[in-house]
Image (cartoon, rainbow, N blue to C red; front, side):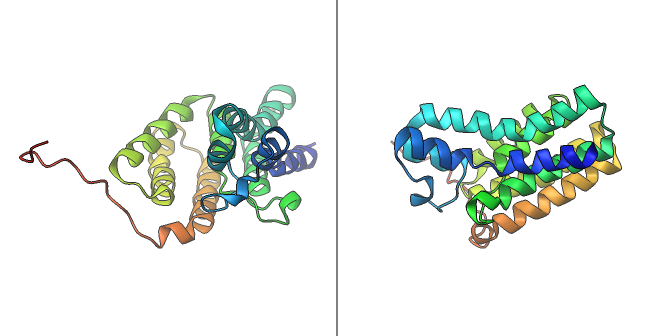
Length: 198
């Protein structure tokens, strides 16, 4: 059963909703804008907020549902839930439906972590991403640093060698998929000068 659930996780993660919805509902190619990433952010840009929100929901769900199924219906062990989570994330990042050129796995990772921590990771992740966005404007660094700091939350709240393994793999994948953006360095947002007149 574990092999089946891991395979389910990989297939679920590999479905490129961010490509499918803009193409068939908005007649747009999500890879034609920005960095060409077949991810949820670009779906907002090319297809508008309605299709963008649908895309985010499905990209999130494809990481959440396989773990939810394993946890609720099969009482899967923490180690096997971790393997399912890894399969979801890797499936998205290296989707066979996109010739193994998938997205950066942010939304699907959010679904995995939210479900595997029973919802606790969601607010933590959103807070870290929001803080990073306010401080600097390089999305690659925001995502990668947020995942790095997220490890501290795991240590404090969910001390588990299985989850540590998932975190390490997730962080390594983020670094790999964001490497071009990371090379541009951290780009701090300029603060208004306190003595400058409007």
